[in-house]
Every structure is written in C-alpha cells, then in structure tokens.
Amino acid sequence: MVEDPFLIAPRPDHVPEALARDFDIYALDGLGDDLHLAWKTVQDEMPSMFWTPRYRGHWVATRGEQLKELQENFQDFSHRELFIPRGIIPFQVPVQMDPPQHTPYRRLFMPAFLPRAVAEVEKKARATAIRIIDSLSDRGECEFVSEFAAAMPIQAFLTMMDLPDRDHAYLRGLAIYMSKPNHPDSPAAWVELGDYINRWIAERRARPGEDLISRIVEGQVEDRPLTEQEVFAICMLLLGGGLDTVVSMTSFAAHFLANNPRQQAQLRDNPKLIDNAIEEIARRFGTTNTSRLVTRDREFGGVFLKAGDIVVGPNPLYGLDERINEDPLTVDFERRRPRHIAFGNGPHTCPGAVLARREIRIFLEEWMQRMPEFHVKPGTHPKVTTGLVNAMGELWLNWTPPVSGEEDRAEAAAA
Image (cartoon, rainbow, N blue to C red; front, side, top):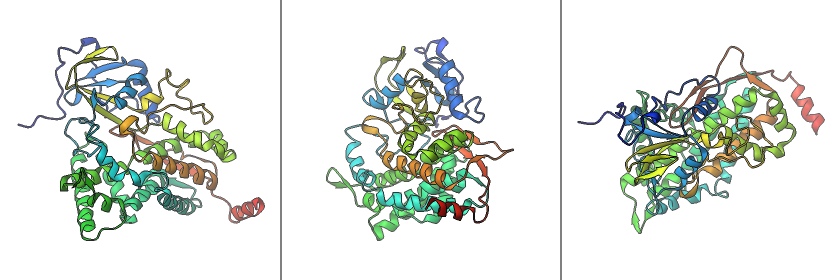
C-alpha cells in the first residue's frame, strides 16, 4: 500500500509539543496583495524552528542563519529530498544529488550558463521584450504575467534548448501546476512535460544540433554515456527550472513598481541603480521554498533533529530577516549590499543565476524606458500563490498611452 503523501502525521517523540504548529506551506495564511509580507509574518510570529504535521510531517526553518546553513551544509542537509511531500515530483538530476556525485553532471551543462555563453540568449530575450512592449504600449493596459513576464524569459530559455517559440504559452500553463504539488492537476502537468521532453530528446538523437538538449543527449559522465533516465531527468530539470522563477520574481517587482511611482522614476532617471536594484529585487521578492533531508542526529537552530527528518527552508525569509538586512520590508534600490540567497549558495548554486539576473535587467531597462508611469489597474487585485515557487498568477497593469505623435516628438527632442 502506497503511503498518502498528504498524510497528517502524528507528532514524533523528539518534537516538543510547544514547537508543533498546523502550518501548510502551500496554503499560507494572509496572502493579500503582498505574499512576502505573509512570509515575514510567519518569520516574526513563529519559532525560528517549528514542526508541522502536514505532508507526513516536517520542520520549517525561518531565520537567515539556519536557511544559509541548509543551503551550504549538504553533508548534514542532503538535497535527496528537495520537495514536499516526498516523492511527489520526479527525481531531478543532478539537483537532488550531493557532491561529489552531482559534480560531473553539472559540468555537462554549466558552460551553457556562463556569461559569454548566455550573451546570444540575452539578445533574443531583449528583442522579445522590446517587441512585446512596443505591441502593448498603445493599449494602455496588459495582464503582465502572461503577456510579458512569462513570455520573455521562457522564450529565452527555449532559445537555449532550440525549442519552438510558440510553445512558451503551453509550457507556462504546465508550470503553473507543476510548482504546486497539492494541486490536483500537478501530477498530470509533470507527466505532460515529461512527454514533451521525451519527444524532443528523440528528435535530438535523430538530428543533434548545438543546443542544450543535444549537449545532454550526447553527454558523458565518468567516461560513459548518460543513461536514458539521466538524459530525461537532466532535461526535465533544465526546462522546468526555466519556466517559473524569473517569471515570478519579475512579476513581484512589477507589482511593487506599479504601486510606487517614485521608485519607477528613480530607475528611469538613474539607470546606474539597476545593478543594485536587481539584487534588491532578489532580496525582497525571493521565490523558492525547498526542503532538505537530515542525514544525522544533531542540534540545529535550538532544536534536536533526527536523521530522516525533513526541513523546509523558505529562501525568501533570508532576505526578509532583520538580523541580515536592516528594515527588510522596505525596497531600497540604494541599499548597501542587499543580502539574499535567492539563487542558492555553495555547490548547488543555481546554474541559471547569470541568465536570471540578465533577464531581470532587461525588464528594468526596457520596460522603464519604453513605458510611461504604470499602475495596478483599478478594480483588479494580483493573484498570488505559494508552492515550490512563490508565484504571481495574474497582475493587471494600466497606463496612459502616448498621444499619437507625442512619442516621436519626444524622441526627436532627445536626439
């Protein structure tokens, strides 16, 4: 009999009753318009380490010091169980492996994410962004997530894998459910993405190219070809990883800017702030909520953990911890050294971090310079959800379209 992954577990003997909370990471209370404020409330009102019976039982770490160690100390906190509930998502190679086993697999695809290598992808992403913005500007409104935030970075990632641009909307639709393991459509979405990837793996075996899928199909580890399952798992990881994180972070940033015209003007008037603004956005609007498997009995964050326990570390809480960043809820594009772990640390640092930062830069540069002051459309409210990725599902923006000829005159005057 297969154990129900959504089982409400009894409290183990080593968990103090005072640290047990009925907490559902996928149904966070008090979301409102600011999901990260809801996470901050968890950090402020819950113990720094607490246990919940949800999803067969697991710990939650809420403070920066513990969150950073969860990322870096793979000896005690293994990546083998990276998602809750356990076993709900197909095994991801190499992100669910620990050093030294995972290292040769990372070497296969890391060259595709180095700064020089992503330059061509960046060009495609920027051209896509400009085309979308120009098509939207005269409308005076848009649904930002589907029409811009999902289109630009997903199409850039499709470029890396030499997949059809037209597939971005289809893949984004799958990603919405894939990152929410408690949604009834989540298992089917993972299966459907798997079928999609298998079709393209077969295509690349027949007609290899210079793209990322071909690199994996033809790749070797430890002087042997990758197995069929390894090829599939790596391609699943790479494509799945490109579908939601930057989409969500960009959408949260757009929502903030829509409510803060002063910061919009700040970025338009002083583009030199954009480098720091990228880090501040990553700090304030972190996205991923992953878990770790405890490998040995030990004390951690003032509690006793047993080997086999699961600890969830909501990464956004590192940047929101006032012990790490002063006045953490305030977005300050001039903040000195915004500190965050949005892209990971240590040997498991996200390979796509360079590309992610460049995509956020493209949004800040092109949208700020090409769009007039924008706002959240009156009568609408953003739709936010928690999951493996904190996400914004819908965000309506509006602005006053330029009067016919006004934009040309402004460009002529600037010239």
